[in-house]
Amino acid sequence: QVQLVESGGGLVQPGGSLRLSCVASGFIFNHYTMGWYRQAPGKQRDVLATLNSGGTPNYDDSVKGRFTITRDNAKKTVYLQMDSLNADDTAVYYCNAQDLLGPGNYWGKGTLVTVSS
Image (cartoon, rainbow, N blue to C red; front, side, top):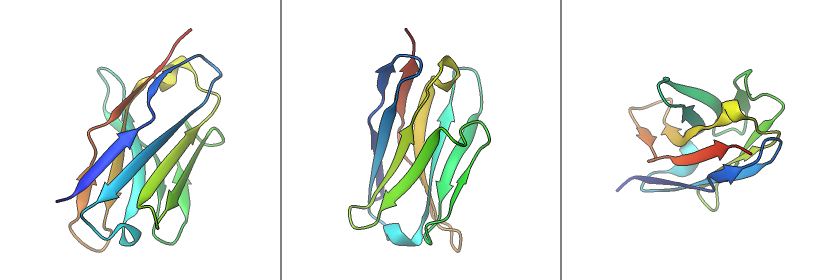
């Protein structure tokens, strides 16, 4: 059974930092491109960062220089370090696993990040 379980969300003040984690199970983790997405109220779900099986990251311009995606294949975990947070970063953050050579495309249930003073 495939599972992606996010954690690390919460309330943070503007300018602060959070580190999100996503633990995967039920598929061959190191074969998949892992990604972080977010969805703010009333808006579509947008990609923030992806990290392929070879370790190459890609970032959306909105988070480039502030967010860092990393993965630990031994722990089957992907992380998102978020710095210099602002109110526009308030959203539900989702972990995604995608097999670029096959049909596998999985989502976690999300973790809420609220940036407010």
